[in-house]
Length: 254
Ligand SMILES: O=C(O)CCC(=O)C(=O)O
Image 1 (cartoon, rainbow, N blue to C red):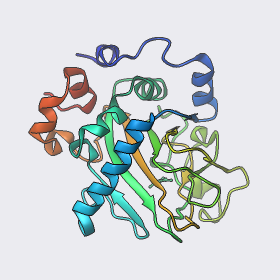
Image 2 (image 1 turned 180 degrees about the horizontal axis):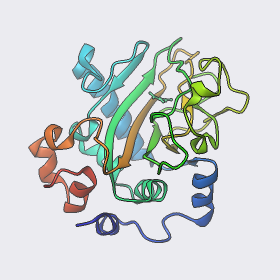
Image 3 (image 1 turned 120 degrees about the vertical axis):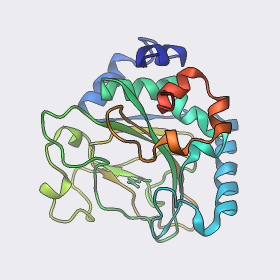
Image 4 (image 1 turned 90 degrees about the vertical axis):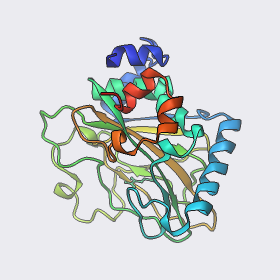
């Protein structure tokens, strides 16, 4: 198996991404896919989010990261078949392959919900300081399980910053402050925001009293370590239900 065979078996073709989508990823660093998650799946993902939060309580998110003011979940690959589509959907895989441009694998899938009054993050990239001749290292996707509105903690981002060298702190005095070129992802639940991991972005404060739940499935070039090593983390029951192509994308076969 190689990446092209795995992608082919998972339904990626040469037309999965349009020329305009490729151009936008190259030039702007992101795509917003509206009406991407159908109603049935959206409900299943929302229900699973709450079921896991209830079951895991204070431990929720611990495998990777707990963040003050948020309800986080981690290691979702192992926690429900509902999440399989988030890292096996042909469009998402095509975006990852286009941006990374070489062999890649799943990095992780986590969940994040900014609590009322909380959730504001520094403007950051999901990658260390970039050298201009570096190939892009990864792609992150934000799956909206609730509507994103101007005041409920929608993700902010600064288009085209994936092309800059260094990191936001090299350009911006106060990375907590609004950036003059930032945009908010204002979109309905069921949308997916996919972006080059080098593009600057961050969560904003949830100024409502409602949930603002998302999933973060992410992908990295194969030469880098995963957020959690799937060869160690993957449960046998998960492995057994996956296709050979899915196992390749997770990098769990020797
Ligand atoms: O959930 C969001 O809006 C963005 C989260 C994020 O960028 C992060 O946790 O690093």
